[in-house]
Image (tube, rainbow, N blue to C red; front, side, top):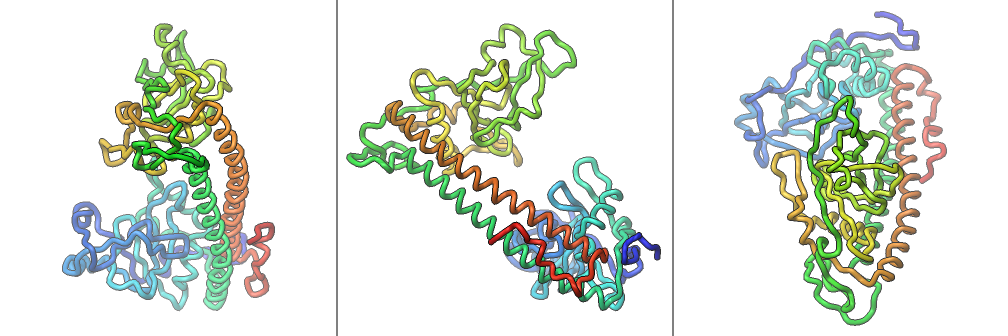
Length: 442
């Protein structure tokens, strides 16, 4: 053992391992083997930071489970994630729950059984999920896009290991204190969900004219229902011109016609991120066609969220757009902002029903977008409704920012609490842990 400079000593995990196994790789276990019931398959998504995530359950038939018995997981086993990303640390761990039933681990998941007379599974899960250990594990990983470790690397992970009695105290303390923080996090997430639902309902009611008394008519839009009798119903292409960007010359380090342009990643819901702009050679004959004007509505054709839209405000004098973005420009007095709110309602209700041409990418084509029919009241009514929705959106944004900030603070303090406890930075027998939520009220 070596002294780390902290209160507890650092020891390789291998010194405590009785058994360790990973999941079956390759064709030994694929989605074709899954069934509606049987033995549980524990996947990466089930391994949280010191807690088992019971959602997203997958199963294999019991007869096939018996053939994969060497990968078996029993209640109380230590589970370690061998693959991570920016949101899920590689090496995080949890304990298999008591009511798990017959189970195996999948590839990139490790099942470990320790000598618990020296190192508790409960404590090891907390230590492996701490920032102190996860930072160490990250330096041992391989993989260019996602951090990965193998069994040999897992064996060499160094943990701060206090005496067994102290391990019990730390695990009990963290179970209780993180549960308090987690309850606050769930409350904030619930409040965010309620806020988002109220925001959508406000937009939906405005677009279908729920506030207008009097005669209604069939809008022809099943997703919208009846609208006021004096509201016009027309397609997007009737009131707006719709242009889809296309691939031009590839990016080059030099070129006299190099111009900044927007991509799918730049267009978020109701705002355009100009912090990461690409440059492309737009020849003079193409510049007028693909140059944006303030008030142009941009809609994502592809990416992870087709239909996501935002209005260009002209903050950069000369800006262009490229493939995978629809540019929509009003033909007359219609307000792009009104159409934006119509698109929000349509996207939320899956009106477009875009079909993917691959398993990971979907597309909203011009042929799908242009015929979409929306209600259009008179321009002054559009203006009044847009002003009301914008004011409400501004208020909602401030509340959302506050809730997001509190969630981030709770998550940060939760992680700091775990690290301080497992490294011995404070004595859990005297620390209440209650200050971890100061400044974050229920």
